Image (cartoon, rainbow, N blue to C red; front, top):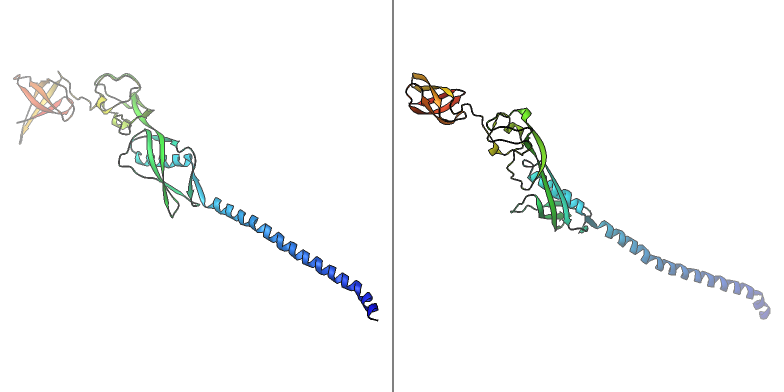
Length: 265
């Protein structure tokens, strides 16, 4: 009886054992797959974190930073500034997602040419100083004659023009405003297209040597007038020597206007 009962139940026992084995193997496979995937997920997150935690400062960014700094420093002296960064040639890595750049002023400021600058790169928490070597070019709008001007010739607006030219120093000697030239006279012969300096022009002469002038002498309510001949040329406000036509006596007089001088007594 017992033997017949075992034979009847044997197929059912075999089927149950096979199903338990399959289920156990499947669970082991799932655990093994999950462990293998975890390192890949962790490595991707680390890579993304590194990309977000670093910024690159390129030569172009450094060039713009230095140029804006010099334009502000030289805004009253030159017309334009250009900067070409020579070093560093490779981008500079700075920790942090957002970086601000600012030129550190130097006590010994230079002019155009090859210059070295110190640029502070700040990410909000720390600052890194970048040494920058650059070629700096500066230009001005210089005033030049557009025709030959004789000495003592009065300069009109049609006699001059402006040209863009490169300068090698910020404190250059050239005139850049036409208003400083119009109404002046040439202090010497001036060929065309030569950049004008302040020494090349002067206030116009209102009296010249050998001119006949009216000599006016005032003292209190007394006024005396006579004529004389100038012994030198002069501008308004200058002191010149004149000779009294009646007595021949030479006097020191101040130029008041065209053909008019004044003496004190």
